[in-house]
Amino acid sequence: MSILAIEAAGPGVTLQDGGRRGYLRYGITAAGPMDPLMFATANRALGNPLDATAIEISTGGLSVSAPDGPLGLALVSGGFRAALDGEALPPCCAFTLEPGRTLTVRASSAGSWGYLAVAGRLDVAPVLGSTATHTRSALGGLDGRGLRAGDRIPVVDARQGEGAPQRLLAPWLDRDPSRIRVVLGPQDNYFTKDQIAAFLAGPWTVSPRGDRMACFLDGTPLKHAKGHDIVSDGVAMGAIQVPGNGLPIILMADRQSTGGYPKMATVIGPDLGRLAQAQGGTRIAFQGVSIAEAVAARRAEADALRGDVPREPVLRTDFPAEFLLGLNLVGGVTDGWDAPHRHGERSEALQGAATV
Image 1 (cartoon, one colour):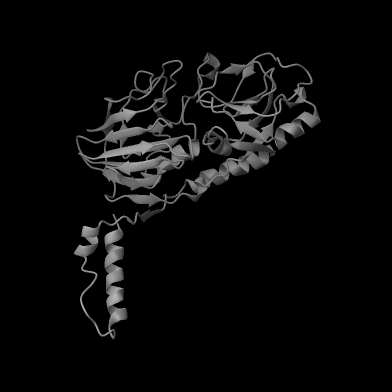
Image 2 (image 1 turned 45 degrees about the horizontal axis):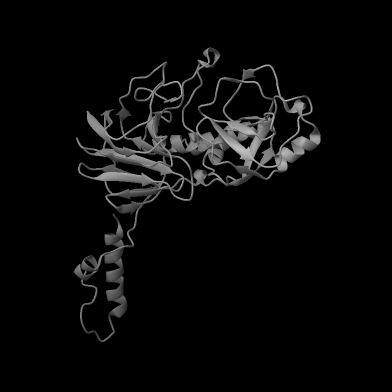
């Protein structure tokens, strides 16, 4: 058995799996990843089940090591800055973390969540059939809390990766957060047609006070046609409530199980991640789609995850002078006749050395 050691973890860094299902009627919501597609991509890159336990990284950042033996890792993030002992890595990559080395992930100007998957199984006891962490109710994960420095997570059936870092090529993660697709209802009849049109047109601005429970929007308040209270009913991830102040609230992974504000619309599943990745200050608008269109988008997302995640070597561009001199790029005086041949040799040498 190997160990993944947490060297540092900011607020909001938790263990998540695909979510805790089947307990909504008891007031227990699913939790799970804020960006389900990015989470599943990290697991797919390592050949894990798509809903396997992984680390969700918030803008608070994370540092990990593998003290007991090499571990294969996949990092899939929304533009975070990653480094292996100070050497920059792509925000989406797979590699082997060797003992004595440290992976550090920090927030940047793009994205709000990232995922670190491990080649093997993070050995955490499930609660109600799931390891997903819901911190408000202290369920799942490690004692129902976020990760912190000093935590040591056992890894069962640990596997090494392919050694040198490789960039993960996942074009399905290139998502525009400015346009979010929704299905109207179930209480869109609490609003007039002009208010529905105003809701769809926006623009709305994502508030920085959002968290795993909800995304808050700022903009021109909407007006209710039939009041802002309903008999409380169940809510899904992506449900868009409109409370008395007229500013929409989009319920996310750690949402409550029921709500008493009318829900004008629901964000479709494939767009939950792109919304979750929108940082505070991002301007968004909504696009109404049919249920058939939402289902088609879900099928396209599933198809993208059926095969392996393509990879390419990470090429270095920060060669130290000592390294370049060691290649003996200048071989002395030449009359120029064999310059093209020599240039080809040097190019091949550089290309080979650039792969890390």
